[in-house]
Length: 114
Image (cartoon, rainbow, N blue to C red; front, side, top):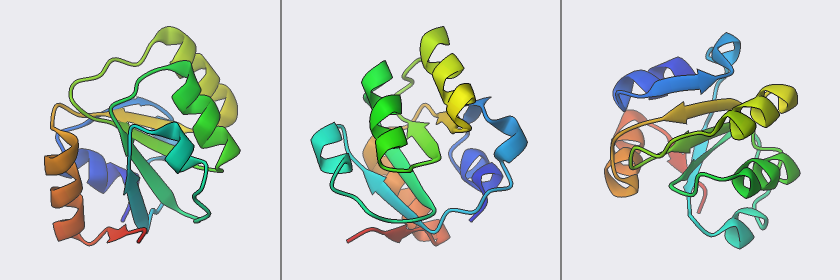
């Protein structure tokens, strides 16, 4: 599924990486525990989280994750946006809970990691 479809399904806002919204993701992983994210090894993965800080961007970088979906109306700081731009990541925000966003994406065809 393309990132633009994900944003549309979730009534999301692309904060940065809008030039990459045609990227495909096949799997998603939802977590606020960055230690769990560090154990992931999957290509074309969407990280769904409510943890909006610089550590999230750095963790995604270390895990080769190119797109992060921030749920629960979390705000991306200018520092987060600048770093994500530098790393070529796409950041999307949405007003939904992690549970609802995950469920809608699963129904739309995104595969769970486990």
